[in-house]
Length: 519
Image (cartoon, rainbow, N blue to C red; front, side, top):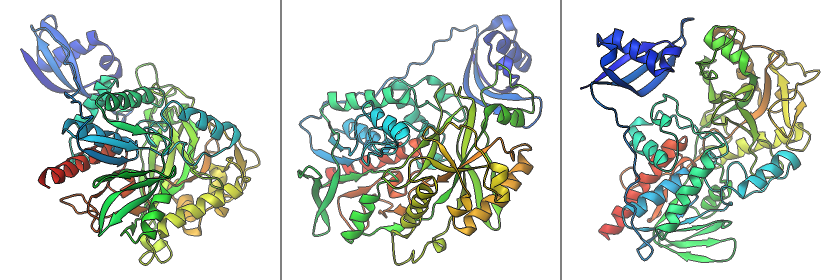
């Protein structure tokens, strides 16, 4: 027989099948000798008290053999000679749109401005070491999108948008560990995600789809408010009456292109701030209320939300055991983000700490749909100047930041291009700077010890989400003005991470196919 329980156990019990059987035996009143196996379905950590507990949802097999459920990929068909759908961008929205197209019997042609996932690494190395920004191949652009080399976090609150488990199962089918189906905050890791992305691409190609790298779209061809195809930087014209636009939150040239063509877009509020790095050991001590976290607990994350003067200020994309990365997409700007390897075994923890912005913060936002993007760009360019006109990032120790004092010295941080000691009040508008200063004091009330000069503030964390929304019909998913154009994912303002972008990609593909089948 099989029983299902929700139980709370110690970290050691959760990590050991023998001890877990003992805990289940006590909880369910089942003789331990009769328990064949305890299969963990969901896992989360409750560290609110010093006595840390692990919450588990488990299937308990009693006098019955346990067979691990295998996850299989859908039966993807050959679509080489089928009707074509153009997909702009090979991030999670674009890749999962392509997979769904294949399932539904249509041929995806992915147009990607950047390089394949492995070749991309050379440009990331050049960015980290030589401070050279390749505008088409960087942490934001290239196969796999922005999430590939900045962590591969899979946590999402977007349960209402679609089937999260379906996306997770597809990722497992392409090689991710089945643990992502179990953890409350699943994570693949930057060291493992590239191989999964490459396997997705190979399947698309083997089924007859196309993936064109180093191919930047420079124009969307429109006739009588209906798309007819695209042009590329190479001078090619690719004809199509269906285009899924999945270019990501940093494709400023696409936003500018749409604006020039009088295609309706809207300024969108986003959040902006800094990325703060602490010793991971310190975060563990604060969160786990211990001197040492021990072998049965993972490096601790944290999540804080505060209201400061009527504005939200919160942690974003927290990376336990992680590294801060340079994420500029053009020369003359500095951008930070963070990532963790799968084991989260680096000695530092980092998190974006960002301030909620409003449309009223951007000059002429009602009349200028690029107003939020221009605000974002100005801060990144100011940070580049303050950092020394290189990819070195302007930085301050955290207590010095609160006091408005330039740090006399800075430790070496995980940000490889290096840091420059400066007053970050010169980077941000006054209202953001003061909100951050006050907010960190409030953060310290929730996490005693967070406010320390061991922590270093890096600026800016500015690519939290798209500063532009490309409006679409809520039922057909087509652009409100241009027939055949399907704005998709983070860049269109309809997703906020790998999972939600993948879900949105699938939904756009379904709507696109539905329209083709009806025509």
